Amino acid sequence: MTDPASLTIAEAARAIQRRELSPTELTRACLERIERLNPRLNAFVLVTAERAQADAARAEEELQAGIYRGPLHGIPVGLKDLYDTAGIETAAGSAVLRGRIPERDAAAAAMLREAGAVLLGKTNTHEFAWGTTTNNPHTGPTRNPWDPERIPGGSSGGSGAAIAARLALGTLGTDTGGSIRIPAALCGCVGLKPTFGRVSRAGIIPMSWQFDHAGPIARTVEDAAILLQAIAGYDPDDFATVPVPVPDYRAALVPDVRGLRIGVPRDQFFGLLDPEVLVAVEEALETFRSLGAVVEDVDSGFTREQVISAWRLVNVEGRLYHAPYLEQHPEAYSEELRNILLQPLPEPLDLATACLDSYRIKEGVRRVLQSVDLLAAPTTMRPASRIGEDPVEVEGVQLSTGAAFASLTMPFNLAGVPAISIPCGFSSEGLPIGLQLAARPFDEPTLIRAAFSYECATDWHRREPPL
Picture 1 (cartoon, rainbow, N blue to C red):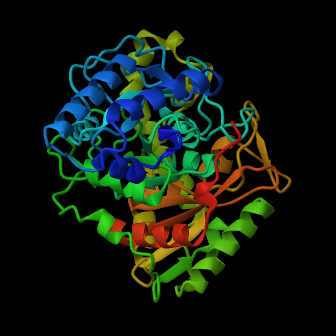
Picture 2 (cartoon, rainbow, N blue to C red):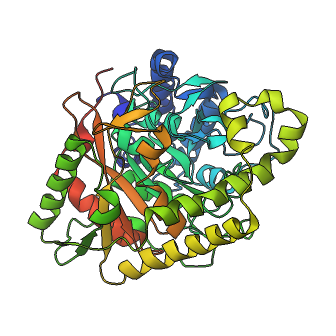
């Protein structure tokens, strides 16, 4: 057998079921890989080796006793350092919460444990998730496995780098403006942001109560579907979740997009792109056409001005959450985040306009999705930039890292619709490029079917970084 850590979740699950691989062997392979590669990449900020070995031993005992919890039974995973874990530090990549030991698991973490997953540790994040680079002044920068001098994206950069480097078979991230999809695109992984309300955020340190989403980063669409299956569902501890039945996401893994209508919103997503990103995305659209999908241009349903306006709500909510910490320990914040959080608050009329614009974006995107099954666009304007490079350049235009890497993902957070990033090519420098698909609310099955169909027709997801 190849290195067990290089297996996908689905492959490892089949090997475990056939007794060809044990959870302890698989966990040991991941821990050994973490020990060897993590000092260079800084994907994990906390490795829970003893917990992982205990989880794996318990899974092995259950399997030997004929107890099988499903495809995550005995599978090693990592959690972004925003997910509360009972008895294990959760610091949100900050100095403010350093030493914080939760008493209970976040809902999604508890559901993964119930599914039999093995916890390897906590993955690095931008400080309190406020950024797109995972260049963290407190925990150090996470490095992109495809080029360690470049960013992995953020704020779930540790989770994306861990998947690309085969340090874990699955990870969970959070996504407020693109923080699952951006690392997936820049690290050559699959990142799935579910519908707002599909996965509980209870026990996850918030950035924005209105726009935070929790979801998986994995090597393949099938793996992302397996992880989503384990964490989806109604939770009374999260006001945003709704009692909508959870479908069988693996049943959507059918490589057939014939007749599927895919809208391409060129007005807001294709205006400023790195040429290699544009070529890769256009070729991906041609692949969908060759598979029988109907690909047509559509209006996005919103304006950039509305997105900028609505995003002010995130800053206001951030101020509310951080107010007591800022008052007591302002020195514990980095200058970057402190300056963001202490920006003047919007005037009441501007705040009301931001609320209205967020509704307009939601209404506009969902209206467009009534005429097509999916929307397709680049995930980011360009491939990964160098660590510390800010501003960055896109076709001669100087942009902040936030604008360059989150402008194309933010709208689907504001709209609350599910979106996925899948690998669709590489730049001439060997850097991954991501394609983004978005679907109607709670229509993750169509999203998964389309992404899986593309994945079956290409081999981008099979490439591994030259570590």
